[in-house]
Amino acid sequence: MTAKPIPARPGRGAAEGRLAEMLRVDHAGELGAVHIYRGQQAVLGRAPGRERIASQLAEMEGHEQVHLSRMESLLNERRIRPTLLSPLWRAAGFALGAGTALLGEKAAHACTEAVETVIEEHYAGQIAELASSEPALVSELSQFRDDELAHRDLALAEGAREAPAYPLLAAVIQAGCRAAIKISEKI
Image (spheres, rainbow, N blue to C red):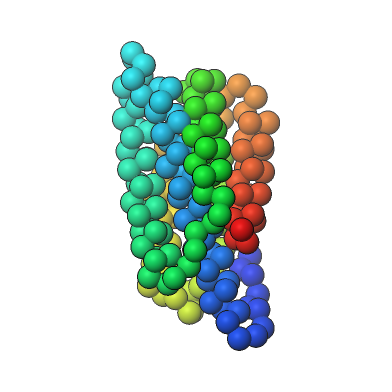
């Protein structure tokens, strides 16, 4: 399921305002993702016999860090302020990552699958909305979306849906992600 693009708003500065919302929330999302992987690595990163997942988590965090760095550059280039809730998203991301990792590898992968499913939908909506007005940005967002899909697919291959209470866990995480998106657009 892909998100429907939001119709253009009327008025002077509306397009710039909408773009600011998009980049603000994308920055917040990448910031949260980096901290989710850091939380997971804090629990699973050095545990004996967990070298495989530790390597996967480090690689995915590296992708998210590249995305975050680019989002920070875009915010600076376009003079857009980040969300005022960045400290909260750092802490919440780390807590979500550590908490799911404490439930085990499958739950950590379920977290990744749930988050990346929402983020893929989010990026798809932005790509559709910006297709004609921001082709260079659309190209970057498309690459980021593809990276997120690769993370989701890896999590699925590693048994994300075998996590304890998977339907509930995924639903709660996805609802939290959607709420964070809406909040970060404005605050």
